Length: 198
Image 1 (cartoon, rainbow, N blue to C red):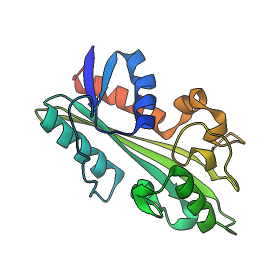
Image 2 (cartoon, rainbow, N blue to C red; image 1 turned 60 degrees about the horizontal axis):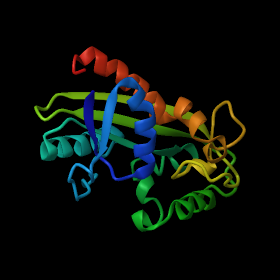
Image 3 (cartoon, rainbow, N blue to C red; image 1 turned 90 degrees about the vertical axis):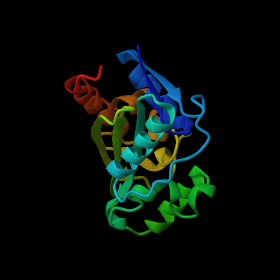
Image 4 (cartoon, rainbow, N blue to C red; image 1 turned 90 degrees about the horizontal axis):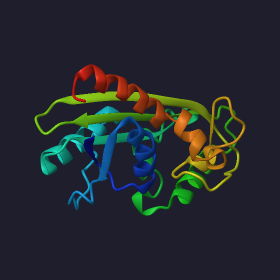
């Protein structure tokens, strides 16, 4: 079984990656378990740049292949914001998920266009520098009010296309089939097979 280090300490991301990757034959180890006690500074201007920064740094540090995801919510009425700054939206990383999505709802008060999309960019970097990348998007809209307690981040306010309820209500099983990360991971699997790294 191939072992990847997940370049993240985000428990929600770990659960989603594990649920989708392990049935494909990949063992996933959180970076903290691999002895990484620091966060990579996300200075990239795109999701792709940030995913590569995280994966390449952790691969060099651990000498194992590292997989990273940089993802975020892009809201049309906000010009694509919060985008790569989704985790630091509003009051930054010190804010809870609820504070961030309630701040988002305040920013959208009165907006007629509530269309949005979740974007996920995945990057695998091996210790010798080989790279595999993939991108996935999940279109949808922002709800008027939050609902549900499932998932994490903006899940209680994001209604995916083709559904009438947000991810916070739809739950993990549905999310793992249609989310931006699920789509990125499906594309990543195909890219990984083409690369010959597995």
